[in-house]
Every structure is written in structure tokens, then in C-alpha cells.
Image (cartoon, rainbow, N blue to C red; front, side, top):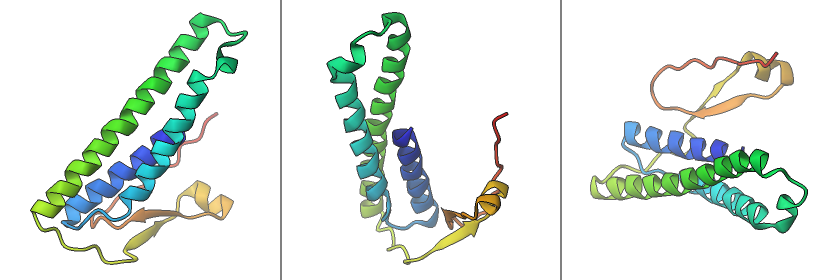
Length: 132
């Protein structure tokens, strides 16, 4: 779960960087977090304790999804490197520090927490999704 969330954050930062023609500054933090989560998952998958007392037919789909998420992290890192190279070659400007906008969703208002999204210069809507 953490890998996909952090990879999503990386991709949002990179898209924002390209749209604003600025250097991707905060993507490295999320890349590091997603790689750390992937490393934990790899260690869990290699652990013999995971495989004990498990039905192989139920474990294979979970292991496959974990493997695919690890691949997503690797691909996200490659995309980030490509965007960094693009930013360097195209002489993207430095991002202004503190450029964020606050978006309040219904769930965030109820919990007292606010979601902070990068200001990408276009309007967007947050749609809260409830389960059940």
C-alpha cells in the first residue's frame, strides 16, 4: 500500500514539475520512501515465515501483486530520472519554495486533517470515496 501511495506522489510531483517547467524537487523524498517500502516487501516475500502454513493457491496472487508493485517502484524511479534529465537539458527553472494549495475534502473536514496538494496551476476536484 505504501509503495503505491509513494509512487503516486512521485508521479504527481513529476507531472507538476513538467507542467510548471520547474526542477522536480520533492520527488526524491517519495522515491526513497517507495524504495524503502519495496525493500521491506522483498524481505517479507523472501522470509520463510510467510510461506509456512499457507495455501500456495492463495499466496501466489498476493506474491504476484507484490512483485508488480516492486516493478512499479523501479519504473517510477526511471521516470523520475528521465524527468530530471529533461529538466536539466531544457534548463527548467528552480521551483519556488512553499508553493502548495490546501484542498479540504469532506472526510478531511470531519477528521480535522487537510490534504495538501502541489499547486499545479489548474483547478481540480477532490472526490471522497467511502466504502460501505
